[in-house]
Amino acid sequence: AGIAALTLLALPISGRADVPPVPFGAFRGFNVIYIQMESIQQFLIGSKLQGQEVTPNLNRLVQRGLSFTRCYPQTGMGNTSDAELLAMCSLLPLKDHGVFNLLRSPIPSLPQQLKAMGYHTYAFHGNSPSVWNRRRVYPLIGIDKYYHRGKLVNDDVVGLGISDMSLLRQTGHVMFKRKLLKEPFFALVMTLSSHHPYKVKGWNFPKGPFEGTVLGDYLASANYADHALGEFIDALEGSDLARRTLVVIYGDHRAPGLEMERVNQFLQENQMKPISSEGWKQRDFSRVPFIVLIPREDGTYEAGSSDIPCGQWDISPTVAHLLGFKMPNALGEDLLEEPRGLVVFPQEEIIYRDYWSAFGGKTLVDMTMERPVVPMVLNPQWDAARRAKEMSLRTLGLK
Ligand code: GP9
Image (cartoon, rainbow, N blue to C red):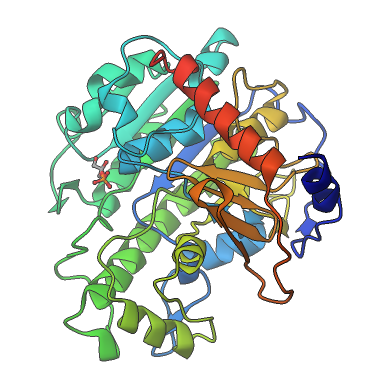
């Protein structure tokens, strides 16, 4: 282990963080809105279909705000609900169970922490509250008021629930027009219309060569979700809340069911590297956007980007930096400090800087493919991964 550790010290990292220094606690007392986007992946950012941007609003926000371009979803069996756990609690989910179905007692989380500081906590989602046991789990993670399908107007339904356009308009109405949320607040807002099988009827987004394919439907549904997001951000920016609200936008998990050949055709048309069934390529392809909008006095946002690997477990420690506290029991890290570049997955995999390693360290790949892989094992990182899993189980009350 000693030799491996020495080798590791010399491990290069190709990623770069070009993130402005933001003082710890500079945004103490600000409202926080989390926008968790269903199945929205990073490869959509900047990509075009027949000359039309798929996600014009996300593309604009990536430029205007702080963007982490190598954020990996660390979800397990609990899919979307695992992303909620990761982003709000900085804990690791499980590969073979949905943690939300197992939780019985309160766990440390960003909403819990904020409540202790006088915040009010809310969630908005267009599905039924029984899905992923949210009705029971939200109080355990400190969310007090849940606007769900049973409480909102079901005027427009897409797939599993209220359409993103309707949900985000209703959410905007409650937040910015009627001002029903008590400040300071934390609000989790989750989109749904880009859920598999990605059917959004009547939405005009020409699918070109992908007409009649799952990928074509996915791109159209992503365009729809992006449009709803754009409207919501415009409504926020038109309100006085914009000056005292942090917005955090991230994708929940990889979009299931996309045809790999079609994806490669699309990637190629967008000058991106193709994928294959190799584990590391699949993992790298799964990346999701992670954007933080930190308002400045002049109506713009703090801008910058980082392509150092990170994961959804880093979201709340990073937000806590802005709000001026350390997240208790967090397994992720504050990306506004020196990030170590370690991402642990529930499925026996880790990413450490440019390296992907699986099966307890038996496989190791240099993801840049720019260097021969020297025989070594990431012993300290695998030890850290095992410790993280243990600590997560204990904090969740599952061990
Ligand atoms: C529904 C949403 C979908 O509320 O959570 O969940 P998923 O199927 O992606 O886990």
